Amino acid sequence: MKKVFVNGSFDLLHTGHLDVLFYAKTLGDHLHVAIDTDERIAEHKGLDRPVNPLYIRKAIMQSLKPVDSVSVFGSDEELINTIRAVSPDIMVKGSDWRGKRVIGEEYCGKVIFYERVNNESTTKIIEDFISRR
Image (cartoon, rainbow, N blue to C red; front, side, top):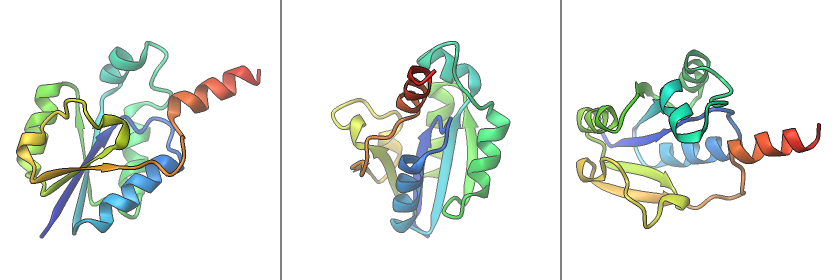
């Protein structure tokens, strides 16, 4: 069984998220998604984030067709431990991670960078919403 791994905040689910999840699923038999805790998102993206709390983000992720399993992590060490436990053949990261340190890449077979079809991001959606007010 070929295992694929994706991680992220998945705060406001948008088509960019769906694109990467459906793409990742085409690469293997089992897609595991690891989601950042609320505290980790606030630490990295600001105190006004996440928009959706973890229990909502996790429930949505678990209901998506390409996703086979979901876990949660609150630190780099927890993420590494999850990657080691899943032992993925492939880790999929957005193309914006190319050239940057990918946490846990040494514990998977290879990293594939997904080229975004559109320029959607949760931050951009939030900024666009605020600017319309």
